[in-house]
Image 1 (cartoon, rainbow over the protein chains, first blue to last red):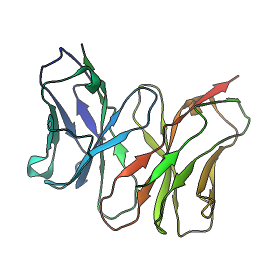
Image 2: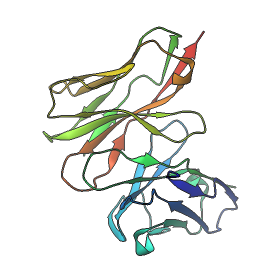
Image 3: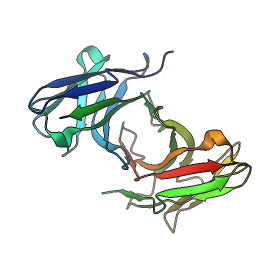
Length: 114
Length: 116
């Protein structure tokens, strides 16, 4: 068990470019979550999946954001036409089975938009 | 909508002393989970302690304990015998108990410094 892994750890891009982040959850976990964290704030929910189904999306997730989880394994979060306000840490978390509550987090992908 | 409030942006404690971090929340639900997560600098967030709202007994995990006051919607974290490794951001979080994969709602966090 290697935990939740995220790639890349850091991404610097110019405004208007597209970026994609990948998350590999703990292998037996069927639930996967994306959060966004800006400096000095707590994580804000973006979206989550149960297996390959995207069950909830936050209003924070504008039409420039899209997330997928094909085959219910890894997930990608794509941001199109990035804006400076998109600069943040993007956290992925996973959990298993019944509603015990605990989420296991990755180390995050930090995005800087110049 | 559920909200979680942490009114202490920063706290400081001397090594071996005890510190209490505060958290209040707002919900109309009767069943839910509450959590404290720790986020060390440049490291991933990890669970410190969990409390089920239907349990009257306060949760305890080694040096960490909570004071859960359901009527007051208060959920504080007490760290005893503080260690240098306890220095981190601490987030209080709420999760609805609805049998599905509902999301965690986090507070804004408290930065804990541990001094010698």
